[in-house]
Structure formats: structure tokens, C-alpha cells
Length: 127
Figure 1 (cartoon, rainbow, N blue to C red):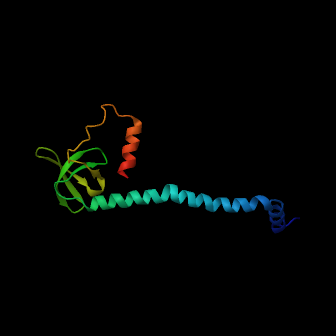
Figure 2: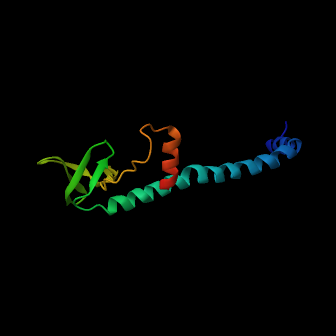
Figure 3: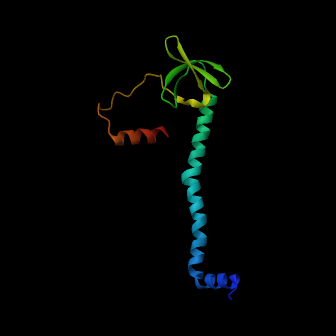
């Protein structure tokens, strides 16, 4: 009867060339996953936390469900949004996705049609 340790030792000795490569492959995958998945997600979470902490009355915001409104008050973790004249709803502070740019300044020098290249360029300039 062959012992388990002897069997494992013989398998490792037979595949010694490939095992060194496979030992390097796993850490490289973990580093890649960190830079491609984990790090960007943490950055977005921090940006969202900063945004939600900086909300003030009078800000126009959009919620995660797509509702636009003006902040009229706070009640702990609840925000009161005015979505129409004298119509207010309560939403969680965590439901706020972003602030709406109400500056009213638009670039009118661009052509009426927008291509995907224009959108990608605008997003790259915003970052």
C-alpha cells in the first residue's frame, strides 16, 4: 500500500516545472483583482460618503431611483425632498446618488448631434 505522503511527493516531483509558474500565477491574479475590482469600488464608496455627508438644504439632488428634488430639511438619516410645489417626500440619506448641476451653463459650441466619442471624451475630462 502506497502512503499518501509518498504519492503527493511523487506528484510534486513530476510537475516541478509547472508548479513554480502556478505559484506565481495566484498572487498575480490577486493583485490584478485588487487594482481592477476592489480599489475602484472603495474609491466610489468614499466619494459617495463624502457627497452624502456634504448635503445641505436647497441642494438639488437625484436619488438612486431617479427622483429629482430639492432638499428642504433633515430629520436624522432622513432627507425631505420637495419634488413639486408643496409636495415633499422622505428618502434615506443613503438613497441620494448625486447632486444636480443647476449652474445653467451649457457649452453651445458643440454640434446638435452627440456621438459616443463625445461622451467618452467628456467623461475623461470630468475625471
